[in-house]
Image (cartoon, rainbow, N blue to C red; front, side, top):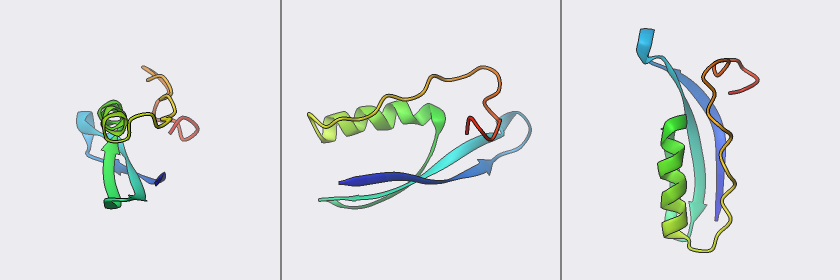
Length: 74
């Protein structure tokens, strides 16, 4: 199995402006190609634990209240 965050996309406008991350990969069940917001990574991470028991899934960086739009953080 291999999973990669390959790019990011700016979505929405105004108060709904956010960054979405393109995730590509492949496992024994097929190709993976999804777009997820930061807040959805917790759910995605939980899904990986259920689908692949015992696999190491790196922890997520903490969410930031400020500075989260800076290129360095993204």
